[in-house]
Image (cartoon, rainbow, N blue to C red):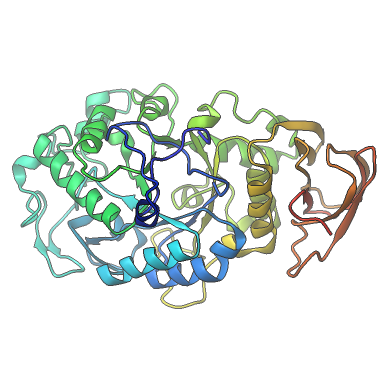
Amino acid sequence: MRKRLLAASTAGVLAAGALTAVAPWQSQAAPPGEKSVTATLFERPFASVAKECTDTLGPAGYGYVEVSPATEHIQGDQWWTSYQPVSYKIDGRLGSRADFESMVKTCDEAGVKVVADAVINHMSSGSGTGTGGTAYSKYDYPGTYQDSDFHGCRKDISDYGNRENVQTCELVGLADLDTGSETVQSKIAKYLDDLRSMGVAGFRIDAAKHMAAKDIEGIKSKMTQDPGFWVSEVIYGAGEAVQPDEYTGIGDVDEFRYGHHVKSAFQGGDLGGLQNIGDGKLGSGSARAFVDNWDTERNGSTLTYKDGATYTLANVFLLAHPYGSPNVYSGYEFSSNDAGPPSGDTGWTNTHAKPQITGMVGFRNAVGDAELGDWWSEGAAVAFSRGDKGFVAVNNGEGELAKSFKTSLPAGSYCNVASGESGDCAEKVEVSGDGTAELKVPGKGAVALHVGAKA
């Protein structure tokens, strides 16, 4: 994945003359260059995302920020209203077209590229007036779609073992677009082209599982802009008719099994099995790995911010281990699963800004594709090197872990970038000439060293 570079990321890249011509349908995988970490700022207003790019994401070294859907959508306070579009105007709860354009420009200036969450499988489940003033009814969206643009199966999906049922019937009552139609494909392509023209680097394709892979390829082929980076949301289900690996020819795929595995290991008290976490999953070159997202934090299948220090350590591990392209999820506190985002500056989890996490973004950038080595594990603790560029020890136990660890780092004095302390090199660690380091890793804590953070 990290070897297959994008043709271009943003308008800024295009202006620099760096565009490489590719066929519109060509698979485009991981974010290019040395900054491959994505932060998903779920339901953050575009103006707030822009501020985070300037204040946190850019300085920390994040390469990408994924933002929630920008399209006009149904009205309501619940988070999922963003996922019921009624037109392709950029005019929703998170901000206007001007807000969106300003965010992309500001983030780009901070060195962070924007990935847009694109809802193209369906429209709304009912009737009303959208957030941008568009009057609509199910199957009739003036200026966008009419009845003939939707699949004929007008009932909910009932059999995930039946491909046609999954991909032509309705997901929780949402009007299911006939994405095999060239007319529909062209309208979606025009919308995506519009986002690309504003400098968006690529897309997260919502509910990709409910569209045939060839339909998505058809959409890409009709784009006039280079399609950019694509990652498809395809939730794995044992024995289901539609499987994640069908979509790897389009781009990357969200690997939901990763978060399930991490939860089992961190809550089960044995981190040893995480060494080969990619076994039985998508290949590392096609997978976007994450501890949780807005669906899994609500259905209980993964760790969440409510797991406190264990959740933070799981994200440290995500950024330290070489499997997949890491996506740090940062949402908001909630007590009701339907609750929408905060209206102000409080209530956000700010996972992306925690010192342990920002330190590990720098770690990921420094170690790149360096191989996993020097593996050690014992119960709730694990340690490993990333070639001769980095070393990490994670202690999910309650008590301190005091041990002499073998690393592959050059001798020297290093900063613990996972100490959780703000400021420059709050905690120093010495690595001897033979590569050993005497560490005291606190309970529910970590030590992470890399060649880009020498004391």
